[in-house]
Each structure stands twice: as structure tokens, then as C-alpha cells.
Image 1 (cartoon, helix red, strand yellow):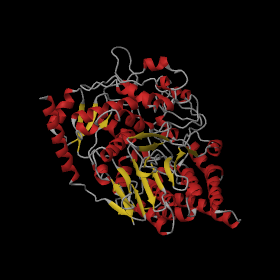
Image 2 (cartoon, one colour):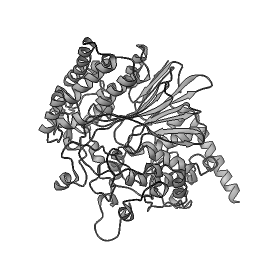
Image 3 (tube, rainbow, N blue to C red):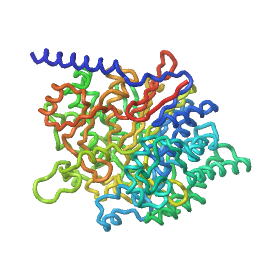
Image 4 (cartoon, one colour):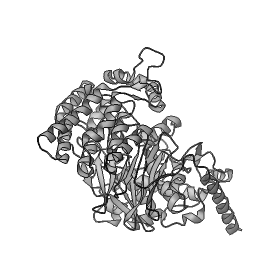
Length: 620
């Protein structure tokens, strides 16, 4: 009887999946020579223009990055850039760490003395050093073909004036009272001040002369270097220096400090982009690459290591058993993220070897009760699977997401949460960029930071990051991610690349804060386990766990809270409630995923652009 019931559930879930397959909103994007996908149609066009100029996927990705930052597509120029690049000549994946560090004076004591539980959500005290300009210029100098002038060309034209999308315009209007706090932001964004609607209207030409001047200064520095006989790469480095040590840096620092920020010239001059070895795991013959512990990327690898021990396909796509298994695995991996992840360039050293070991995954998976949710899931002890002893066993023992009876509970354990506000911050910010070409270059990027509302620094036109809010002030929360000058906060930003038989198989990324590795995991399983094509996989309904500490604002967790698609069948809903879940439902739960599948049989690209927002792709 039990076997018959399980078979029936699997068949019904398979039928649900088949129905979902048949109605993707967008078609697959096919290309033979190149593909460019990002969060906005105008920005995708900027990438396509680089290919038409003879550029490679790195040039296209950099042009899309510049365009999206100029468009305030939930990021700006003062934010941060995280990328993975597949280098066809070297046959390897390279990580790009362009996350800004905390400025001088940003200490736990500084924020505690001001009565703060965390660095603030917005404003100059939320800002790290700008990382996106440096990340773009280092990627371009190292791996691109075109000049900085060519790659910034579309962004400069857009800064001169472009028709603003409704999403950005409405975000400005919704946040105008915050924007009004900062004089330069007020001047740039509130173009109809005093009228009923003070933000730009959808389709209105939005002009940013200060940002245009800053971008032109970078191009001018490159041009002067070329005139002195420098090569392409060294000329781009000269533009980099002008930003981080020259007149742009001086005005950025002046503007930051005028608003109460902590930035110094030494902070900008001492910051650098790191080119890194990414971390990886193998899932059923597929090598998946992610950035390491300065973002949440290893979460997906930890989850895959655990999920490899289960027969997911037999559970049925989005059955109660499948959703429960994903939720438990994600909760286990996220608990480790919330305690062990931080800047690997600052002590203490993160136990990444243990976290990604198959033995540790097996130990963690054994904790799963297949009949009910465990709201008290805690971080494990990965030091048992690598050299060294865990120096934080006492803090680990005290760590919990469950509200404790009696006494005062810290913010991350409070139960009385405005869920709509919580959900909005949980999935805040970011865009994604995907590019590939026939020569074998592949680029996956999740840039973020300096989203609306951003404090603009002086006359640079550059909005400042809000990433410092992802630090903690209490070592008991996460001893690896306590704020310190120069340190990079553990971010949510997590591009992905997967290789099969040593060749690119998938390139994928998504915007949306703490949902990112959750939905990317499900996208990957949609293709590998359930045979979806790339467009089906980016549009397919996902679940989201809130049983983890929000990386933004108040860092609260919601044990047992589960987001499901409105089309979830009633019997699945009933089973999950019986397992102890508290589900909420939304019309679309795919997440704004963008991805490229490499069709080796046909020798072509298949692009998937989410229907969640304004994501758009172009291929040839």
C-alpha cells in the first residue's frame, strides 16, 4: 500500500511537472557565435554591441556590468562585483573578488557605541569601498580584447540620458523620503521635487551628468596612457589608478565624509581586486564551481554533497518529500554559512576543506528526520574532517535560531516579524550577467550594492554600497564575519559555472539576496535530475527556506517558514503543514535566474532568461 501511494505521488508530480514544461513564458535563446543575458534589455544590448565590435565574452560582460550599474538595476557603480570566468586557453575557472572592504574606523565598538545591533541598512555608514569599477577594469585588462573606451561607451551614452524603466523609477518614488536625506542623491533622483510624483516617470529620459563626467575621466586616463605608448592592459590599469588614487578617489572620500562616512584615501588606495581559485565539488560527474567563503557560494556545493546521497528523481519533482529534503539540506548548509563563512584574507581561517568534504556531508545528512522539519538545526563541526581544532566550540554550543523562553532574545531569534518587510530585505538587490562566445570564454557575474536608495558621494555621481549591513558585531553569531577595517563582509552574491567532461556545461546566476543559492540549486537539479531545458529550468517554480539568518537589516531567521508556488497541489500543502512547516504562497517563485546551457551535440548555446523581472538576452 505504501509503495502504491509513493508511486501515485510520483506520477501526479510528474504530470504537474509536464504541465509546467509546456508553458514557459519565454522561448529558449539559441545562438551559435555568442550570447549575452542580463537584468535589463538595454544592458543586454550593450553586451551584444561588444560582440559586434569583435570583443569576447569578457568585454560583453563588462559592458553589461557598466550599463546595469548606470541604470541602477538594483546596483550602482559604488557597489561590488563577483564573477567566475572560464578561460578556454588555460582550461580553468577563475574567481574574481571585487567586494569592497570596510573603511577605516568601522569596528564593532564603533557601531555598538551608537546603539546599533548591526551596521545600518542604508547611508554612508553602510558603505564599503567601491568594488565594481575595479572589478570591471581588472577583468577587462586581464581577459578582454577591447579598450575601456569601447566597453564604457554604452554606459557613458546612458549616463548622458536614457529612458528609465518602470521598476527603477517606481523604486525611487517608493524610497524618496530616504533619498531626501542626502543632497546629491536628492538632486539626481528626485527630478520632479515638489510635485506629487518626485521620481522620474517610466520612459522619461534620466540624466546623470556627474556620473558621465566620472566615466569620461576613466576613458581619458586610458587615452593619455595609450598616447604615452602603454599597451591596452596597462592603459586600463592607469584608469583604475585614477579611480582609486586620483581625483575621483579624492572627491569620493570628500563626499562620503561630508555625509558622515568613514572612508579615507588610504582605504581606496589599499583595496585591491583578487583573482582566485574558486571552490568546487563533483555532482554525478558534473564539476560545479563557486566563489569561496566571502560569499555564500559554498552553500550550494555543501547542499549538492548531501543531496547526492538521496534518490531525488524517485521522490517526484516538487513533491512534499522532495521539498522537505531540499529544505532540510539547505537549512543545514545555511547554518554552516551563518557561523563559518567570512573573508578568507582575514583571520581566523575558515574551515572550507571540512565544509566541502564528502564525509562531512554524510554526517550532516544523517541528521535529517524525513518525517518533520527540525527548527533547531545548528552549524556542525567541519574541523572533524580537516586538520586543526575548532576554536569556537563554546560559541557553537550557544548558537541557535529558536527563540528561547524567558529573558531577552537577540534580534535574530525574535518571532514577531513583519513578514512582507522581512521577505523584501531577504531577496534584496543584485542583478546577474551571463556571457559566452564561440572561442570558449564564459563569464558569470552577480554584481550588487549601491542599489536604490543609495547615498551619492559628492560630485562623482557614484552611489555608495550598503554591504556593511551583512557584517555582525557579535563573535557568537559568526566569529569569521565580525566587522573590521579593510575586511570584506560575507555577501550573498554567488555566480556559478559547471563543467562536464572538462568543458563548459552550464553558466548560471540569479539576483535576490539570501534566495540565491537556494534557487540556483533547484535550477541545477531541474536540469540534471528532471531533464528540463534551460528555459524551463529558469522559470520552474522553486521553494524558498527562511530558516536561515537574513543577511540584511536585522539578520532574523524564520524557522519553518517556507515559500511555495501558488500552483502547489493541495495534498503537497497538507503534507508539508503536517511536517511542521508554515508555508506562504506566491504566483512566481522561480527567482530571476539567467543561465546558458552549452549544447555540445549541436555546437550551440541555449540561453535562459527569467520571466521574473526585466531579464533579457540576445544571441547570434
